Amino acid sequence: MLAMIYKLGMSAEKRWRRIRGFDYLAKVIKGVKFRDGIEVNSETEDSRSAA
Image 1 (cartoon, helix red, strand yellow):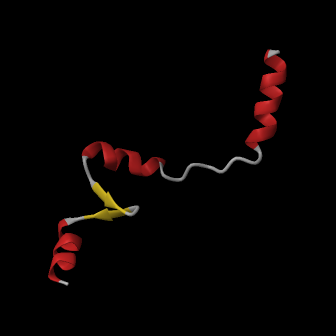
Image 2: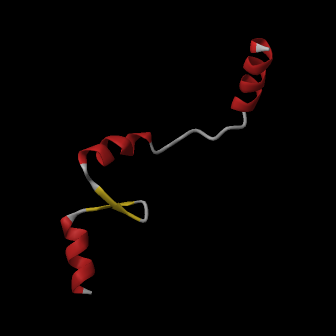
């Protein structure tokens, strides 16, 4: 049973997409804010409030 699960996992791994957001995890842990997947800083917030 374990060998069958291993082979199934190896076969599925070829079609899985690689996770690309792992580098953002450190920023999220530090408390950086994101809006719609884009990092938000004070300059960005100021320009939105002025518009």
